[in-house]
Amino acid sequence: MQTTTLSFSNLHNHGELFANLFRARRQSFIVQKNWDLPEAEGMEFDQYDTPQSRWIAVHDGGDVLGGFRLTPTTARCGVYTYMIRDAQSGVLGGSIPRDLLYGDAPVDPQVWECTRVFVNHATPMSLRRKVHFKMVEAMTASARELGASRLIALTDAKWPRWYGRCGLDAEAIGRVMWIGDGDFQCVAINLSAKLH
Image (cartoon, rainbow, N blue to C red; front, side, top):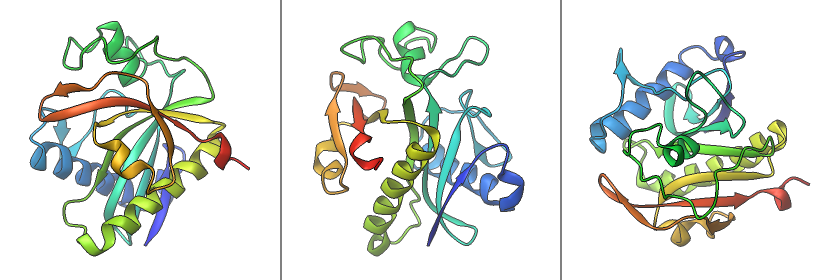
């Protein structure tokens, strides 16, 4: 099992891994969760999959076991910035409530957004905890490389149950809200202690 951070500038070095990550995202979000998201050629994608983002894949060869996307809170592409900020400003048309944060969405080079977090449904239960730990390790390493000391995420509202077990220092930065198929909440993950 290995972890790879993908970007538009290095994806050519990793064969089918980038496409396989998007295929696994489709399986997780469109097939398993039945979310209404864009897809093409068996891959899920959205407006935040730009050269400004990074994608982390936990994989065994070409088989993607889990992954996520990191986007800087300074990102801008046309009318879009990053998902949480765009939801707050109404750009997403209300699919995510505008009052998802207690305060204003940050725009800070040291704060990145973490989205599209998933563990592939085909990943055996015996490996899932290891995949979670690999994702946390990759999150920390990527933050160090990118200069981020904090991540924000819209995540399952049950986050307190497993964030601590994974060694994440997190706090709620928004209310619990029902979105589509479950309760979600915005959290901030402090990575500064892990950057030494």
